[in-house]
Length: 394
Image (cartoon, rainbow, N blue to C red; front, side, top):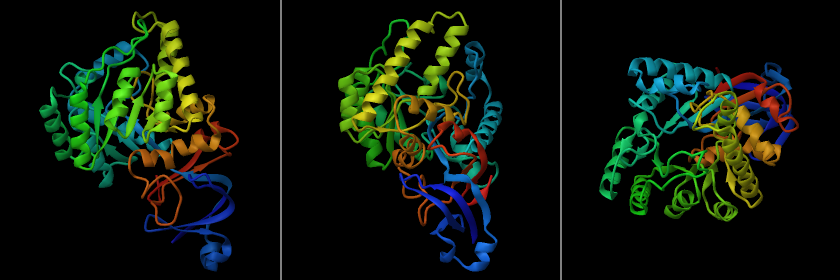
């Protein structure tokens, strides 16, 4: 048994403890308490983290491991054309970068060549260091729909949607990713058409649920988000360009909203420094400010807001969850809620809360040791001292 003496313990449940001990045995949390709760020899040998904060390892439920956060749009387009072997090597580097930033679990929401499945196996077998990987396999879109160019599975009509879902499950997918809409058009200030028909979306979700898989949906715009809510998805990814009424509907639903604020901020930065037709800074800023306002409203109304980065998007590096947390704080979420958005609540969103996300008896010992107190300064989330996954230092 390994014992840690901790200055501030943030459990990820909303509860904190000062000056306590945490025991780890066989990769799981075996006890939390005071010195008298443990054998004297264990207390004497305890690892001293009394000058630090210890909290659960972070969970990022929206990443694309095959693609790094390239900050140049033209260079980024070349990544779609790389061979499988090169892409896999880049993805391994992304795993390493992620775990070093304190993220111990990720959910990969689509990429080519079945790479996320390879990575999941490699991490589980100890072949490469990295966070625990949950995978959606291929993202499912209509023919020519959003993200089809990134190794997506194109499907048209309800029957084809059933087959596409079953293919992902057969290949080892932990969840299903649907592309309900396209990207935001910052020139027209809209999200375009809803690409999946209601029948297609409902059939895909029903089949995924029948096979005990959650559904994550890329959706922007009022119509796209409302259709996603209507068919009963688990998580809504992005959700830009909604209105107050839709934000309130989200708050009244059981859905988890992963607004991915960082990509919008990075696109705005890019638009301000590059001349580009599709990323006008004024248009991006309008969408971004509206997006943050709707996140703030939804949170105040009781929505389940979860931190996710969309790592691999333009300018968004793997491990950039620290910035997503900072932006959620800008939206008015209290520090405790911000931290839960990347720990306990994020684990719930991906259906892994029985094992992950909080520091409680019997759960996996994923620990993040920080210098400073993120409850008083959220920027401290960057001050990573040590990362443990399943009780093992990374």
